[in-house]
Length: 254
Ligand code: 13P
Image (cartoon, rainbow, N blue to C red):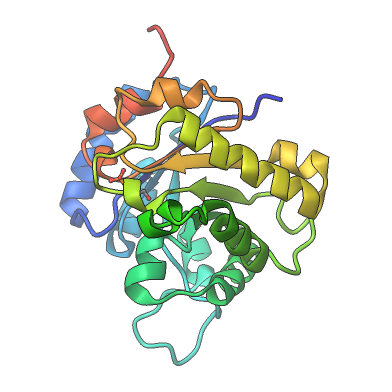
């Protein structure tokens, strides 16, 4: 079954407001008329509002890089899904490996963030992935299974209609070391099979599983050719509009 591709750019802690606006100005015409796939940009929180205005009426959706699990309250420094929905954000990246490993996010925190995001009709992009040590110890599938089971515990298929999964092997992030299309496909197929066991075949066939980790214009075609790879979550290569546009436009001739 063919799923609609989603190519998403995660800018991480990069770009001021003027830099964001200059990027969008340059990027918009490069992807204008691309209607057979979804495109998303996730600037830092400080640039979201300006980005939303600049993206209005385009084929580019807006994503945030994180959110809190409560709607409001005494959580100094945090941003809630209610606030993100209020300014027109559509997607929110949840449980990115940098959040898990640098900021100590657990599967339980991630599950609560997904629940909160869904409450405000945001599409969560749940990130999962093994470290190099886990891969070398032969624990890749075990780690993915735990992240998916604990992160998605208690939800129904109706709740998770807009969920997106991103498989990002930690050893491939920002290292220039991409998983081979075979390695990525193996992990994606495992996740889809697990989703089938958890939520049924119809749900598993519909859910998009993105690959992330050193995606570039040079390797996107090979990755997207695999049956269970439905898009990409791009870090470094999403920071330049021309480079990211080449990734977004993979496989198009014009
Ligand atoms: P890179 O594309 O820089 O490896 O980052 C991937 C990533 O973490 C996207 O969320």
